[in-house]
Image 1 (cartoon, helix red, strand yellow):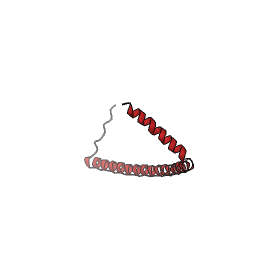
Image 2 (cartoon, one colour):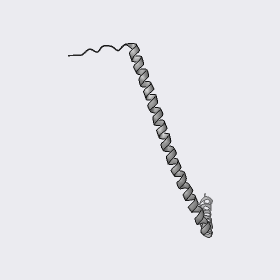
Image 3 (tube, helix red, strand yellow):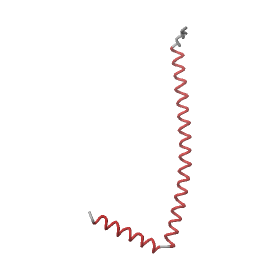
Image 4 (cartoon, helix red, strand yellow):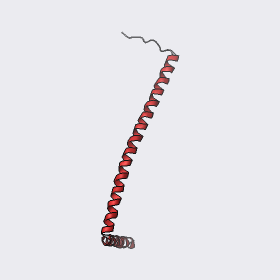
Length: 86
């Protein structure tokens, strides 16, 4: 009970393969555009968050300059001690 399949003529096979390749190319282009749009939206959100964070940090530094100087001096002292041991 084996069914015999008629061979597909070569011109039809070539046309089918060409059609599949064109559809695959279109699908890849659409996917690429969709991904690029999502990345652009996410990067815009990240840039806004970074700007807000930088603004908040700048405000904190202006309100507490001596705390920042003390922390920086302490970090420099610790780093100098660690590097001086080597």
